[in-house]
Length: 436
Image (tube, rainbow, N blue to C red; front, side):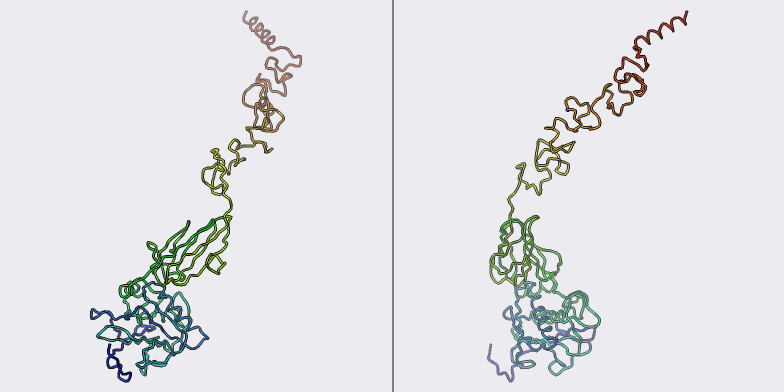
């Protein structure tokens, strides 16, 4: 490219202006693809100076930094660097990218309802940007927040995300829920539509992140800012809020696109605990991982209690529903670790298979008609009802309370104890005499 005199540099350059407004107004916006050519930066990166975002301590500088990071999170291959220092060159031919609060746009009014304006300088013959400036309207009320847009103050960070999108080459979107919609809305992170455009222009790069696990636990991997990434075939894309990668058994080799900040959470198994992340100074189970620019490996260390597997079925007792594999679930098994026992009727600590008096009624099971019933042990008439509950123990049709021999079916209730056979004979004789 020919060297230009700074005094007449703009005679060879063109200017583009894009504004974000609080409500629909009549405005002219450029179409980055109207002529079939896409204006872009010659290299997929630029540096912005934010030192002139003065006020509220460092709130605006930090919000601008985070806005840039949220674009970097989308892993488009374009990298935005923010330096919290002032720089010269606003509204001049000096090729410095700056963000600042202003009362005007290089001498022109902002216009009704305009929150901010991105002013890009590009070389038409090359379709290349060489400079970008973002001017925030000092007259507008700003705050910093996520969530729905609030009526009394616009979210500075989402406005910055919008304007940085223009700086990279994005046009306004017709989608009302897009961060690049011409009017401020409830969206506060880039969406896949914008990301795919930038990827098509600037490409992507990715690196391997290897997670190793020592001990008993797993690692969940999230985008640092929920919503700036989702998982699809081990690659984070945008527009999701709940997706994450789950490494249950290392090593887990994950392809992460350049730019995406991650949050890792080490989750120990029940009864275990997290120890540390090897290779870091972080002792917390939650680890914030800055954007990858090279291959990286991390190891999460957990405690590992010795595995107990009573029945040798390969399942630790803590997860086995039948530890001794005797066919009786542990919740119903008085001896869950003894496959020879499962019941202890008298709760004396001796299983019924080994106990010679299961109901502890002092009648040995071999002599006990009801070995599992502490209230019964004898059934004289073998009618299935123990003598304690049976009102006719010998089943001679004479109730025990009136039977002088309640355990002898051959003797009925007469106080004299007359044998039943004799009573029957006397009755038969009486019947015989009456019939003559």
